[in-house]
Length: 560
Image (tube, rainbow, N blue to C red; front, top):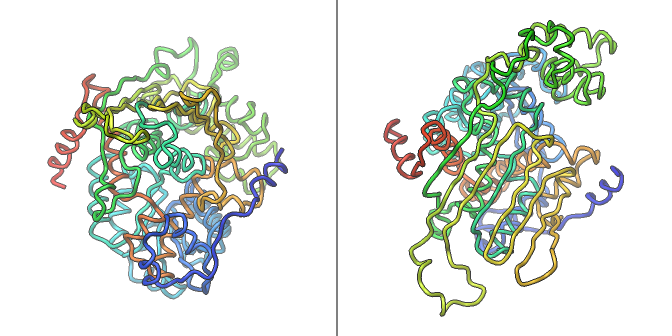
């Protein structure tokens, strides 16, 4: 199967030759499609000593995902790292051959004159990727952005709306490329979905969208009950930490199908009028704790532990997700025991150490112990009222012209699924409906449309002429195609590096590089995050929220 998929995905992509590289040449060709503009920088050779250089702050799972994509699929150089954890910092530094004096134990070192001199001596830094814990993003971003580096911040942008607005203010004061870790935008699957709906208008005018994010039963227990995102006061609500990029996808389709350009009124965003949400922490509560259960799975009586599907022994050792049941040393096992991947020690010693860490750390605690408070099941509804012009007769309109109409978008996030993050979307339009499923293999999955006028069903596959699908041809192993949000991690890394490359090497202005390569700005990122907090306030109060009123109140409150 893997060999067949590799053969399929190694089809050559569309390219161009002998493209002019000066900004003047490119500005003279603004009529070119976004795809052709992207390909201009993708295929034009240049002196690789000028390739953009990047600093990664946070050498954990997300920092490694982006760094791996930069190394394997771009001309970018992973040139420096900052991380508090010595093992993660040194492993990352060794992996990317980073000089010892560019391995920083604290991001604050980057602000010192000595560090700035060291960075310049080794070629400088063009961009920074902030991949630390969510609650640290705002402090790090607002300190580093004034240094003039282009910046990619892992999602969520911050853990409060106030901090998101502070980051937005810092970005808008600086002429820099900005990207947010909304990786779903950059997967070939979702780029195809967006094109079908907004450019091809394959279902006509969209009337409603149903989107489901199946978090997965053991994924939720790992990340949102035992893990870093279990407490709202520390990391924000789960609808933010898990689904801000799902909200972003829906807003990309319905609110901002084109990147905003102040000189083009057709790109003005159209946010929803109202937001409503319902949900609760349904299951992972003290009231559901089995009689006789311990606070930690390793110390739990065997009769109780064996009957519990959420036993840490099962998830991290015995099940296919674990060390023993699946010979797995990657996620989620390496989150509990990062050093397990370094190859030191035999299997038995690794199992012993893993059990020790489960017995002493947060990943071994009972999921019903009451230490968590984030919601495990939530529904959000966004609604657009539509234009008053919708009520007018359309007798003079062309047959294929779409009349703007009211619409709704619903997102369901639930822990209680067998599938893990295999999102499904159903779009109902005036001319048909579309079913989108990111089940394995996510990057090769089809979009299915059913047209009202035609009896047949149409399948739509990924276009390999899409420059954001072109990364596939660079993957060394077919298995790599199915990791990283269906290619979204690599797609975002490529987009960010390409934008920085366009500015540094090809002389593009930042605004153009932002629109063509990133496809969204800080305003869209903040809007998606704001939608999560607005929904959370609606869930708590039980009241529908008017988006524009809520957003204005927040900005006035923070005087931003």
